[in-house]
Image 1 (cartoon, rainbow, N blue to C red):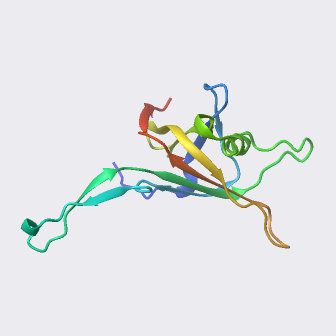
Image 2: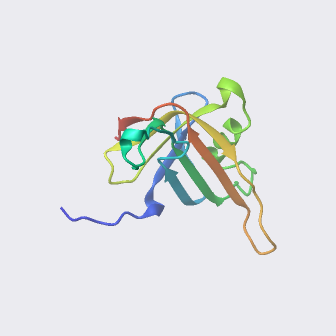
Length: 151
């Protein structure tokens, strides 16, 4: 076995389509940042018996995935990248309908990390005079994550 550094650019990220079965890769990405402690909440459990040492417990776990890249569209039809388009659809919904699913892994991983319920927030899109149009999506896990074997 050789311990290797993992290329961030090799991460595979897919969003589940409206049919509840199909997964689409999210194209155009140049940055993906999972944050396994986003929305974490703690409670201070310090007492006089703590003898001046701070004590705490985790009361809530959370996680997020920040995606950035370029807006991708077919130059003939204007159709957006399917993964980006699905993120944008879920990012417009409210209530229970606002929950979508995401899965991600590196090629060396034997399993997908799956967030069966997550909210999607689409960020600013645009750029300057000599830029390509940017694309952003922040995904927040809602509930527990699962692990599913990769084919």
